[in-house]
Length: 295
Length: 333
Image 1: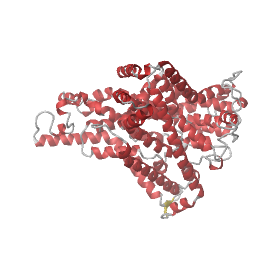
Image 2: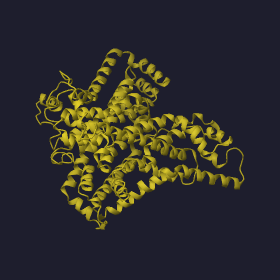
Image 3: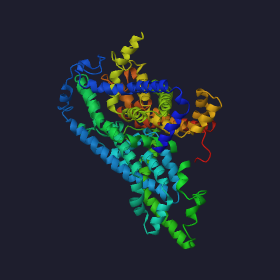
Image 4: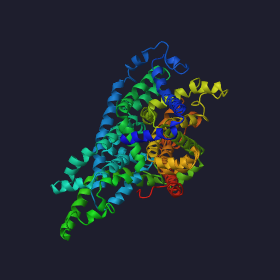
């Protein structure tokens, strides 16, 4: 916070002072222009969801002249006889399950990488970083074959198991970066008091890692909510579908007949992510920023 | 990492690693040291056990299996049959495969630079701390969170279809090519636009990098009479080159793996998985079609391995080029 304040003073102190007004005007104009491009699709979907189906694509008016709620009402009938709330419940279950798995498994792994000296640590760390850059598609088919042989297709296990086994290297990495920066003296003091690793992990390192844990939890929730390919491959009964898959089914089955309903459903599907973003944008942006700086 | 040593006592700051090896306070007897080491190893592997299980079961094992499938004919129902390099020769002879490679390379080569230029440009704009900076930063970041969703793909398809805003805007300029998503040649540009729209994530990383550039450098350069462009070229770019490298690496690798948006923006009633006349048939789309629609698991595994090799090559070239243009600060890392 204070660092930002000092740069503020400095930048306005030097050359910027001379042409402060025009510069600031251009800055705001530029930012507003970018903002318009960014927001257009979002405003479009909000406005479109209150328009009559036939008016959505053709009309350039962002907001409807006479708003209708028929699109939202049509969602009450569900999609292919399945209530929309079922999809939400499924997505929520997967997202919360993923968050718990990531928090537990990645923090344990990160603790070992950052606070325990064990033989082979550097080799394992290199392997972990290697998986960070591994394209997911290489694992797609063999994992599918594996889960198929285990008769786990059309269950949520394939979508959750990896989260409990710390396969999301990005979050391990994020937490390692965070835990590494904690002073070593903390552990040593605790060790003299007779604490073992688990106590140190649970009562000292975890509470101090709160920001990294929160960032990981939010990203995990959003990624799980948005995930399309995983559910597409592993789920094949509509009553197990997630919101993403339900929406795709909507597009394929009723998209042309009930265009307005599809747009309304698109917006509703985005709401949880937008809510998370509004509530936690600080954590998300700071998490993004540190991941880049320390890489 | 340079700033993080502040809390370590200055005396032992020189070699952080040496301290545990010599024991914490007083030298331990060899037997005690050995016992301590064994305990540390045990604790380490106990904490690591979920990751190790995941690595073996879900990463290393499947990779080896996939390498094997790549040389087999495998339809999921019969046992894999070894066919040597046939999958690869079939791939190279398949015009649809070559088309998917072309579409993907085009998407990566156009989309990634445009996205990074947008990210850097807007980051430079926002780096001037003015009122509203935090708001703009958050707003510009939002598309990166929702851009991968099915919802946005649906909206995108609508915005870029016939008679919608993009079509009408280009008509104002006398360009009459119709909506992009219905056009086999243009649909890929709607996907490029979608990735550029998500410039916020690399922008946030650029912004963090820009904040670390010492102000004194600019002031000194200004005293020396260096213009804005020179200052950008000689100070800003070298100083943020590690961050630029990180963004180039990450965005390039991500671009190669585009799937959902191509599949949904391109998906239509006509049974086209990926765009009219395969317009948005990116590599992973074709991989999905071959693996999961045609049950050609062997062929799809071979495709996946080629993708892995391509991504690994790009990564290697980037890392190799690093020493020519990426400047790490003295003492950092």
